Image 1 (cartoon, rainbow, N blue to C red):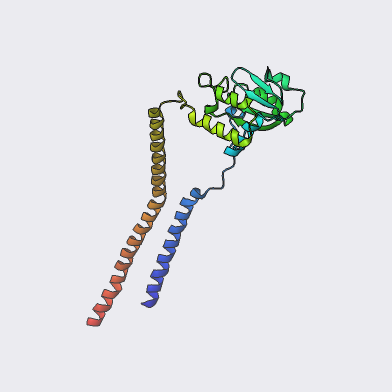
Image 2 (image 1 turned 120 degrees about the horizontal axis):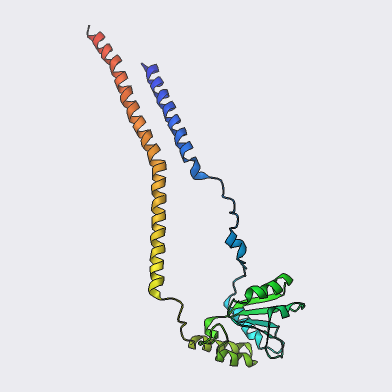
Length: 251
């Protein structure tokens, strides 16, 4: 009788291992190999993406302050309709991107509008002449023409050769007094877009949970069903010998 029970346990163990192997093969696609970087699409090849290290607050203040220094490095202001070159002790002068070619002087870029940025990058980027680059905050732009000129307050500050402490105080005053920028889209639309994005993320997570449940729950349910069926079958098989032995003992 003891040998028979060991045979039953061995048979059950073999069945469980077989089911576990099936479950493992089912879940194997969930642990796929690391994805290779996708090949760039046609749009990505046509668009030029330029990565720059984000500037900190002190970096931006330093670049703005050094514009007005007597020995200021040469800089380039990029507007929507023109670019202006500014050198040490010289008045700004407008020029075209082609006129930047043929020189080796490093330039600092102050971008108020990116319309002419690709043309400037073609000339300066390949020659390694971009010393620093900064997107001008809205508060330092002309409120009526934010893409075409600096604000009047900053132009006056830029014309004064102040020391660093005085420059920072005046710059802080300009930033604090600047009106909020309008025309960037209404808040209701932004809130609606945020809610739609949240709903999409929740839907994606629920779909992932359901998919995981189908991949894991169904095999586990199959294991439980096999266990229950095997236990019932073994109990029925064991009931016959026990009944026969009881009948023999009574005789």
